[in-house]
Image 1 (cartoon, chains in turn cyan, orange):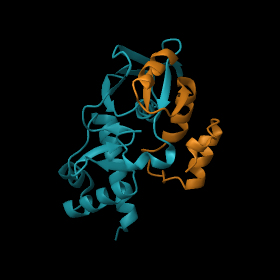
Image 2: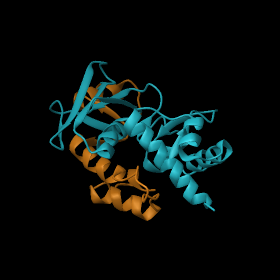
Image 3: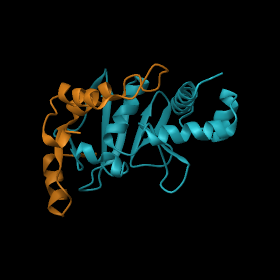
Length: 151
Length: 69
């Protein structure tokens, strides 16, 4: 019989497989079908992953929102690589997607000051960005999970 | 975590009342990001302990109180 942590781990890996290969979040039915698990067991695993901040539900729901660094909904950072496209909620996660899929690629967003497009590429494993471009963290690390949508 | 075109653009944004935190070059962010997310999608991954998270921050020079858990 599979223990709870094994099951949670299987669901976690399957979630990431969907994002990496399909560029989107699976439904609970998708996960249950792919893993041959009862839907309530999948739901329990998703809650466990959310409780430990591995994933996040959309506020007030149990809909998959974040499977860090991936975002299941439209978000301010777009990542493209190898004919795939993903969304991310912040520059850390956007670059994190390229790190996770181990690919060169491009992050596009807008500068929060002027709203002009800003493109940051990873090419040959190195950052290619406009001279002087930088990152700003607004919230100290210890408070990130008070509101993961604003850091 | 937001990306700005330049220090000048960040200063303009802060001058409009947005809270100031910490700045980081994109090179350091990329270094940190690779360390942070490496293998996260693989079966053998596990959540880092508090000490391990702190060690990742320290490994790229993030040691100020802003980065203390």
